[in-house]
Image 1: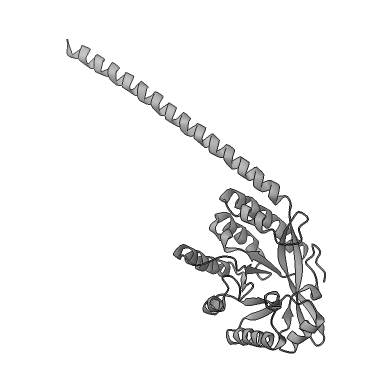
Image 2 (image 1 turned 180 degrees about the vertical axis):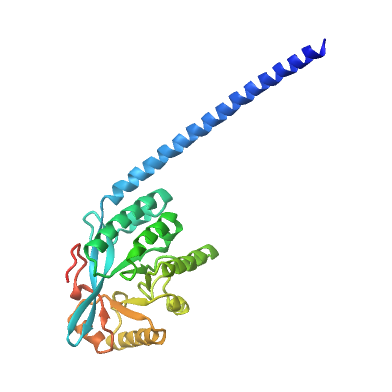
Length: 282
């Protein structure tokens, strides 16, 4: 067999091998494409389910007032999430919407659009926006906050007490998130101090990171007035020592409002000053 024949045979063999490799590659690409289409189909299903829940969400607002001798002044509003005809925070729906990246993306898209609507409609109003640390696991939350931060000076991030910083990953997320809020020029508050993650120990260790602490008296209804007075005195002392604002929530009677005012607590929130409503009153 001549060299020319050997060379021709080798070229034919390589061509056949190349054809087989090409076919295998095409099959592999096809398999990946089918898997990708399957994932996208599942993703669309998740998005559709999330969107259905998101479409039933709404915001209501409760005034935060400053109580003084000359009268009361609305300082801003806490923004509260509702679902359908519900009058309380929709824990189950919120848990579902923050359990995956796709559903949280849908939630954050709605938050951004809706919150920006109110920020634009009421250009002189201050808003407290509740954020759960669970939301901060997703990039879309960071993007949403960055987009609305152009209204900085009118937004306070009200960090809820339902998260835990018991793991290194959660601790890192907490501090990275706090730094991010501050870098965007957003004010920060600890909600419901004395409850959940916001224990006395945790709050006092991290109080330098916030502008405001919020104390709800709804958790202390069982205390008599003397003990209640001591609890309030402690938080007043803490707020003054660390130079942060103190807002007391759960004010339902004028008697309690005056009780607080006599102890120097002027920033109050509760049904006596206005129930959560979709309408902002000035």
